[in-house]
Length: 491
Image 1 (spheres, rainbow, N blue to C red):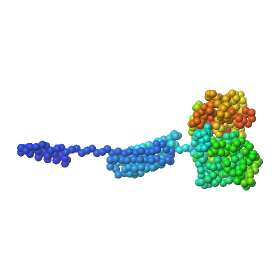
Image 2: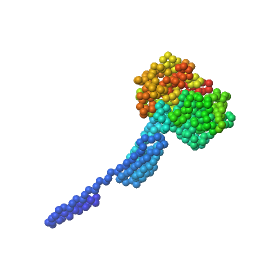
Image 3: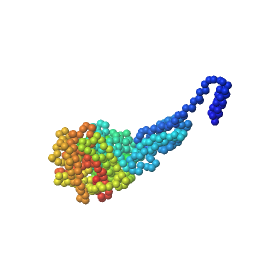
Image 4: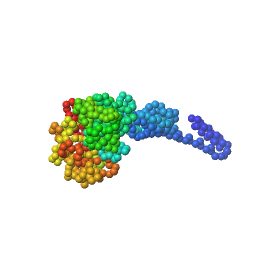
């Protein structure tokens, strides 16, 4: 209203001057006010992908909103300054993951009437009964490994928070119990397990490729979200009771593989179908190359009660303790640099470990079943994730000139064999392939390779070792023994 009144007043003045004969130009018009600058808000969130519980950094600024402070909403809340940064913890989406491996959450900031949003992808938390498997080159100093599946294991001094997480521990479905290189757990000062004599207990572990020797100690063991309290385990390379020498009966069983280079790993996680690595036989008898009573002067064979024997950690879980499931992706001809999979605890106890379409094969008391290959029946066959190839005897396949433990066919071989349950209740034909291991590149650590049976035989052509390539592209269950019932495989 004031502007209009002024213009009217100016017109009256001009008209009066003209009537009086005055001259001159009209006054310049008043310029229009400049338009107000647009309001804006920017908001960023990094990193773009996180796990539940990890940190997200938010950064923001606002322009011309007229607001002294801003309001946060969505996956964060509260009053914020007009510009700044903040670190927040990524939470699970309000609606949950709904079985999906990941979901998006959004952060919003409103300043005055202007708002901006930024989103991040949140990975679903791993189930408590799942432990990630990696097949790669192995730990530093172990050389370039092929077909060895690794997990990380956390061990603690019993009842304390004095712990260490040990990476690159080999997952082995062909053995029972946890064995760690002594150097990986030395700082924990784990308490010794005693033999019935009251002296420190030592143990000899027996494997296809050699032996391990060391003391028996106790530790709380955590695998993923599962735990076993005060579990007896072996420290490989330790000196039980101060005894420096490996007993002769133990050293006679192949070479010492209880070293980083001998094992290609920082330890062995034995999750086969037996609960104890010796069992009832060692409870009442002092068996050579098994348990020992040790002092600085040496070790003598000893009995060992079940509660003090190196035992399968899965059997010590409060839940999910009746077996495991291994999942690994398929691997094509030519191999891969690495693959990732899962070790899942329990069978038919959770949504992620239900047998669904797999055939169950009952094993005998030591975990063996039958394989029929080219008309030869091998009743001491087994499935072993700790073997880095499929090992069987076939004189028609060329053996490598350099890697003499493997086959080197001129082209990929497509083969098959029939697996039969130990009690004859199930049978299934298994197709598999054998690549030339020497044609794999230096960066290849995963492949469909195999070799002659050699030391896996328990009699003339009586064993077929279904090593790690058997697991590629399959869900393989290892059912633990229960009372009088033997264990089983399902695949």
